[in-house]
Picture 1 (cartoon, rainbow, N blue to C red):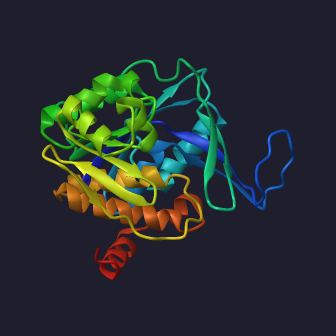
Picture 2 (cartoon, one colour; picture 1 turned 120 degrees about the vertical axis):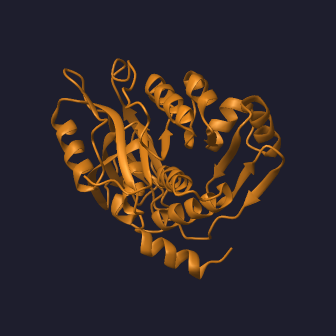
Length: 300
């Protein structure tokens, strides 16, 4: 596969998801009828890699899967999305991670995930020198994340971590990152709050660029000097599943392209908004012309 300049390694969780769109309020102990369903692949690494590929970058997925039918499905989907599986690891005898996902009438998702305790033991073997333009990892594979952040940092390229709770069990990776993008739950877990003061505490401890994504609310950013806001785009959410992962993939790709952090956040906000505003799961991830047209129409 030829490699465009903007190549991004996306490391962490890859799953097979059973999606159920449930129109009524979900009540524990009751039976519900879905109005729609689908089996798809997901997980932060797979979704971020899909976003990188859709937006014109060269995506590599670094994840661990089992040697079962779900693993076969995931590998086929990686190929279909145009991502590179050179860093994908298969563990014989272990199940591929899988999730049950309930999506309510407002587009909000509830996820139940299962992954084997031994699946993510061990690290990630990477080429030396590191040949990619940026690296992105989550907190689900701590040893692999640490290896990736260390290699990217040594190569002088952006090393981005999707800091979702629990955060501190991936603390080695966290302290090697150049950019830490917290979810609200991640920032609460790390710094005891979700406001500007908590973000400032996180920045003071880590000493790098940090932000916190807050759904439809503006993204809070601390660039090492001060906290500021970057507006999101108003949309009517239809399906928020994977929107945060799309945000991280678009952000890492923009950094790999040499864009400044504020512009990278703006592009990520737009990509996530477009994803959340449409049905279709991964098919709703915007391609590059769609993203550029949307940004041109919404000059915020």
